[in-house]
Image 1 (spheres, rainbow, N blue to C red):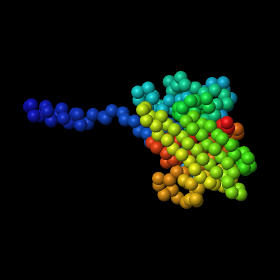
Image 2: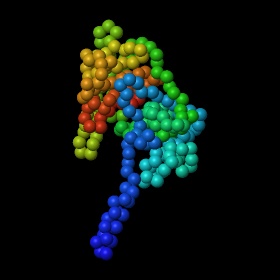
Image 3: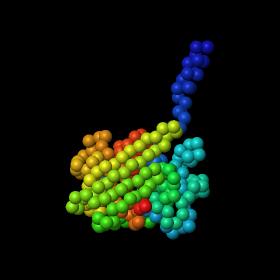
Image 4: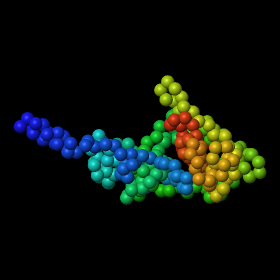
Amino acid sequence: MRAASIAILLSGLLTVTPAAAYDANDPANCNGIAWDDARPLAAAKVSGQPRVNFVKSPYDDDFKAVGCPALTDACRKKAYLVSDDLVLLGRTRGDFTCVSYQSPHAKSQTWTTGWLPRAALAKVEPMATPALSEWIGSWEHPGGGLTITKASVGRLRIEGDQVLPTGRDLHNGSLAATAEPKDGLIAFVDDGTTPFERPNAGDECRVRLQRVGAWLLVEDNNDCGGAGVSFTGLYHRK
């Protein structure tokens, strides 16, 4: 009997449903924006409402936000954005878009990510064909900045640094490339000598720049510096 009881107990333990586990690839989970070799980032403004609350993913509230994102009180976060705030757009799911937001007044690279209702977002189209003068200048962003100057005919020199404090240490990254604007973008790999259209060979610093309103929208593939360092964000002229 004792052996039989132990066998039954072990069998029960083996069939217990495992505890909920975080799944970064769950399509209901918003992880913010992601690099795409084929598609530039897009930006949008919060519009139509004075205040728009972020919406939860299923893993919020200690894995108790089952059924989110949804337009319910239970899925509404306390954090919110206000009209005209600019966000960077990630993927969509039903009536929601996964976004990343950084305050233009932030002193460090602090991002807020989450779902927002698609109806509350108005896409901001980038400049179609910016003149060279629209690129040139010193551009600031929490943690660092970029300087864009004239190079050879039709080409621009892009140089920048980014610093990420990590406890008692610092991780940093740098850009130094010469590239030619094309179709409203400046896109380059490493120093600009490798064609951007060539498939990613791995461990390459890949960067795209766009002019969006008064801003310079920068995105990289997270291979342009130390761990956690990214140039991605909206930059303003000094």
